[in-house]
Length: 496
Image (cartoon, rainbow, N blue to C red; front, side, top):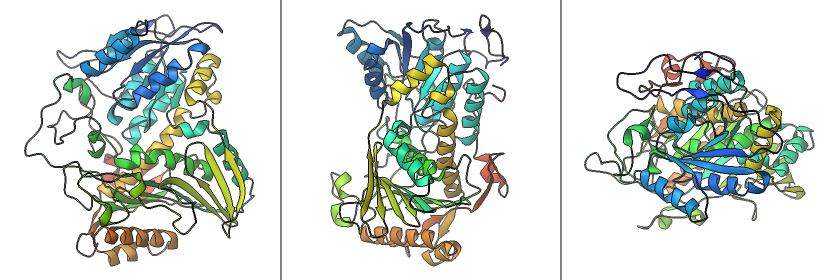
């Protein structure tokens, strides 16, 4: 793609024979202070419903939803009908490329499956649109960096869907900790203890839903046989499309933990241990995992658990959030299953959600509390009007680095091999916090009747990263997993 003036057009240089090309686009208009911002919603079978409600709530700010796009015709028709019932007219598209051709769309929001996030956002900024893209902002590290480059080159406003960044409470807590009120940070820990039951096994590849354009659904990913009963959502647990719970829920807590640490780049060393344990199903991603990011100032440890507190809570109907472990488990009423704990020399800060935080001293006495958040969608719209990237609470660069932390952890895991508990402990013994975390994981699995002495976990590769180059210095196989082979014509371009 070549950079051209605002009144010219962008065209694809080449396309696969018979394939639909990325169409010709005109540049976005210059918005006046009172002009309506016209938004298209891309993907709304799940999280995208919240995008619709969020943008609708900003009508008083002169924001209008003018287009809907989804590869599932049933979802698309239902969405358009809901607007029609409220006497609102929206254009409908099954293909994002057709939507991006429209001159009357200023911005889009993206809530597709993960493997589409970066490409859809990159195409949009090349088409002169501003973008709100869900987390993780990319499926691989390389494409996320390409998206950041494109956002800067085309001077587009691109917000990551990490909404905790719009919490003034957490921001104040971050500033308070960085000011040294609890001394030096010694460890940032993120947790994603979220109920994940078996997705079952299929006897043969499944057919896609009749209303879904499977070619468009796959997009840049392989158009592979479907090995899951539930087509929607369970793609999270397959490497071609999802990133496990680390890149699903965990990205939020990973981002908050990194925010406290103040680290602007990837960690120079990373390793992971875990497995898909406790049941035998078609899923590929781990339901039990530890990721260790070895930052120089203080490590960032992330934990994933999908099994409940113990075997007694596993029923035919599954288990729920109330059945999950909490941490810190020894603190009365202070633990949570999905949270961040920032341990400092003089105490710790506990972040149990997207909008509050509490500081405690070393004895567990409450010191300070923060609460409140602004609207993340509104922040995006404010930056669209101001044209200032610095007005964004979650600029694409921040979303990219936090997403990439999830991906590098998963790369370590994917290159690992089964190992006995003693072997794992020997490998990680240099870090007492990592060793203690593994011990708690082992106890958790034993409570679910998954003894690691017989059902071995996967010990991931210990990888060294060059943060600025965003490449591993000690493993070519790991570098290969920083990107993917893109399916034509859904390729993330080398030159944006």
